[in-house]
Image (cartoon, rainbow, N blue to C red; front, top):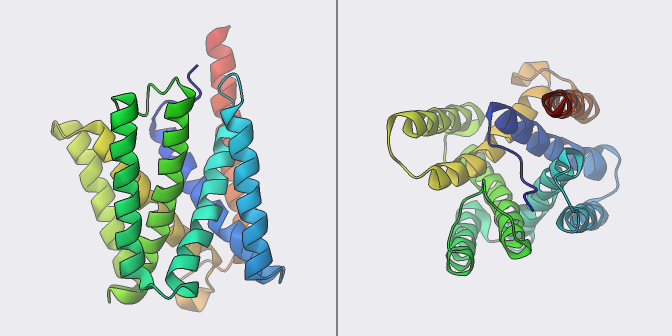
Length: 244
């Protein structure tokens, strides 16, 4: 039974909001509330497994559950990336390379098992397992890539944001003007919207003197949660009206 939403503009806006909220909420928990990195990581990863369990064993598509899993993959992915890059000392470039290899391996096994990597026609339990595993590691890779661009590439915060934004524009153009695989474009966009969301999060949280809007982790989390909740509400309402 299909439990995956349609890939529309609203999907991408909600994805950016959800992954950005995952980062600001994670920072709120670990730093603002002084829970600590180790305990907050345990809480966030437990939240991921809980939401994933509910999603996998749901009998139909539930928008709230689906986007909670997307949110939890963002927080878990951030934790995993930070652990690889900082705790293990691999660095952003090496960590990104390892995550790319893992993600490609997931796609290879997915293709061999399900014969298709389509994200619009996942109807089996095994296919959904591959889907969520790929999403978890793509969000983890997106975190590592964003950190690499901001800290190690020399581009800095603004340069990284311009580069990612330009790549996303090229992906949109490729979708409508070329015959490039939509599955390939989807996963590239999925990875890139993670650091793009992190850039949006930095804009909301950083103080005015650093070019931010100075909402802090609390204010930013409230703003992002409100946007995501409103989009969810209108999306669910639209489906109800269409059924009537």
